[in-house]
Amino acid sequence: MKKNYSFFKNREKDNLALNAWVRKLEQANGYEYEKVAIQTSLGKTQIYGLNTQKLDLETLVIFPGFRTTALIWDLDRGLQALSKQLRIFLIEINGQPNLSEGNSPNIKSLDYGKWGAEVFEKLNIESAFIAGASFGGLVCMKISLVIPKKIKSVFLLNPGCFRTISFGLKNMYYNILPIINPSEKNIRKFLDKVVFHKPNHSLSKESENLLVEYLILAISKFKDNTDKPYYMGNQLNQIEVDTHLLVGKNDILLPPNTSIKNAKKHLNENLKSVRIFEQSGHGIECHKPCLKYIENHVTKP
Image 1 (tube, rainbow, N blue to C red):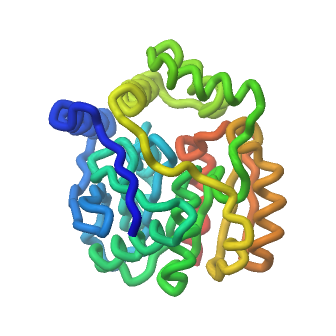
Image 2 (image 1 turned 90 degrees about the vertical axis):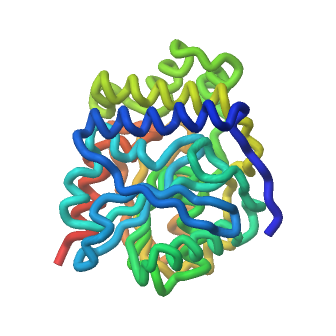
């Protein structure tokens, strides 16, 4: 497996900051996560869990977007309702700014799928629902190609596999701005213009502050060498897993029309539903109606 290597510039100091951030999130939510680190072909993979020892429950495995942590899904206790009915594993993808090791494979290979299969094996997961936001959606598709029989269904939230990112001037400006200058002001502009669609799609002040704190660390302290998501094209024709596509109408990073068109083109009868959230931006993993939609589909009789 060919590997790129991404890293925090001051590993010890920045890892302490990440752990401190996790504790702040736990304090805000009022509960702690189960924490486990497993060894994979990409090195250590960090995992957070909710109810993972309740083996009588169905399992949901979550993969986050690019330059994010899976814990973003649980800002404002976003996973609270789901966690009452499911075992939840939040996987920190290798090569991203988190506590997993920074190795990542060639994005066009199936290696992220093979890595996902290792995660399932090490966690003793025989079958599960999987969900991925943006880059995590692409990872879900790779996993679905490698271990389709272990996937009950997949939920793709504004996924990065059905199209390339928009090169529109507005999107480019607000995405590049915090990379050039990762100030709190610029990161908040990015959140307001790309991630959220306020007032309907937003976080509490406390959770938004936590997200800003994380992004400052992720952008300013992390050297990113991971391959970027891409349109998977005809590779998607091989998908045999039931798939649900959830998109934000106001997503300027991955505008939904092309994603919907290509999902229908490649997945055919395996595309079980398409849901457009009218009042949402790119970050619909932080949009309660989106999480409710997943809940309704994974817990139905």
